[in-house]
Length: 227
Image (cartoon, rainbow, N blue to C red; front, top):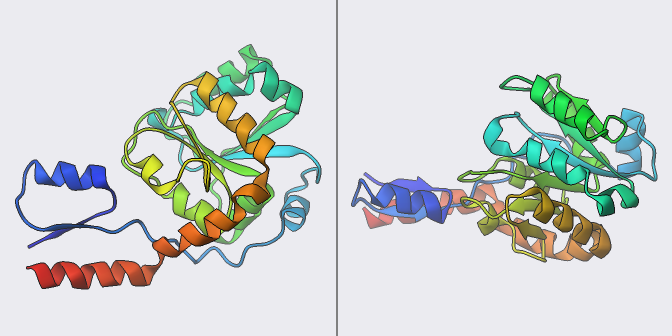
């Protein structure tokens, strides 16, 4: 009878094959990962140095998610000088060897940490809270479940300007939106560190209010009233 879409792009896709009512309701924030912990606590749990600069790629690894672009960005001279490390946490849903080969070719073995085992829900907070920033270097996408995860733990993020990713991440406020190429991703990461996590904090807390489960329930009711 009607549709709930989680982004403007998906709403437009639905309109290509249906004239039924469509409402937009962003993906709510999952809240079953436990309370956030401090960066210090999280790094202690994982045995990571307290002072290191660490960014996180989180989630299943597939071609469209652009991990290869992020690895290439890690070879940027400015990123090297800043001493930034990349933590990759996710299961490979394709051949992992090309990624390992790319890391070796770019001599990034000491600066890219890969944890490819399944992470239980109760351990997710350790990885997210340990990171300075969450990086989503996707080549194409409609949206991402990593974005509400970053909102839940109030972590600034970088996303690429593909699909509807940028709709959920106001540029320069809760994070940085860049083009899907290694150079732009490297510059975006540099901007995140130049601004510092605290710069994005209040924006994230305000924007986070849009992603409640109650707002999705309200949107279901509003859609029903249109039918």
